[in-house]
Image (cartoon, rainbow, N blue to C red; front, side):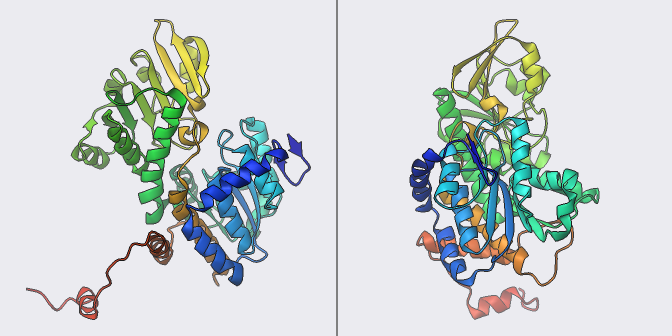
Amino acid sequence: MTGRGDFDIKDPSLAEAGCKRIEWAWQEMPVLRELKARFSQEQPLKGIHLSGCLHITTETANLARTLKAAGAEVVLCASNPLSTQDDVAAALVERYDIPVFAVRDESNELYYRHIDAALDHNPIITMDDGADLVSRIHQSRTGLIDNILGGTEETTTGVIRLRAMAEEGALRFPVIAVNDAMTKHLFDNRYGTGQSALDGVIRATNILIAGKTFTVVGYGWCGRGIAMRAKGHGASVVVTEVEPLRALEAAMDGFRVMPLLEAAARSDFIVTATGDKHVVDKAHLEVMKDGCVLANAGHFNVEVNIPALEAMAVDKQRPRESVDEYRLADGRRICLLAEGRLVNLAAAEGHPSAVMDMSFANQVLCAVHLATRKQRMDNSVHAVPVEIDQEVARLKLAAMNVRIDTLTEEQAVYLSSWQEGT
């Protein structure tokens, strides 16, 4: 591992391999390519110090390249100890001159040292994937706050944390909830998580999904995507929920809906996507069928009660990379994937580049929005401006060579009036 103070990565010699993969992903990111070309000329982020606590993947590398082309001085750290792609980190440092503090499978202690290193950059804008950067600033780096224009947050989990901070009056600078943009959660969460979570489960286990009972815990946008893709693989899909409207939607979408305690006894696979703690708890572990595969698609590794599983186990083995097999006293086996961390990045490569293209376009445009506003936004969690969401959608449609209709003058007048009726 190399550490000169201005970066900390595993191995600089991996840079060439990382560059090839970054360029491969770039071909699937036409919206970012358009923004990079535009902002290279306009330089709306010139001189802006930007620290990002993000998954260090090929797609994130292209986000960082776009931000740098727009004039930003970018420093990155990892938002999860198991999601860093070491070759990408090397390429960012060695070929693109973007400092990175991230090593795959780093300890918790090193993880937070890396966050502090990114904050030593004195950011004016932050980018978060889980709110660890913002949380760290508010807990131990408060001296940075007065100079921060604002931040962006890309995950459901992070937005939940930030809204809790805002409700308590603890949030001391504005944050834009990129996660809640329509061009993010309708596509990234649903199609991205749907494909990449199944990819992670399949890569980790190589178990046939067709014909199996596959339970999805939580039917938000991520859960919807996972359920859809599991159904496409031929699984019998069960959804568990605590929200009545989402449970009703899952039932109307054709999925079986039941309490998790009931589902646990019959499931071959259980994947969590709630953003909450211990949704798979000791009571569920006690009734799971032999060989059940547990995976988490939420941001933090708290959705499965891992301490309870460890306490119940009489033996633990690793038969495959990313699979921990726990044997219980009664002989049952429970297989936990990726140590309970987000399976799509820890056991696979994360979301496809084409869908991250939209999410990261939102990140870039929201950073420009924060940097170029005449008035500072208030200290709360803000929605992505509608015009940004619409621009990302327009650019993506154009890149896909999809054309749409426009309203006639008569139609526009009709929609804005109230006098005409039956």
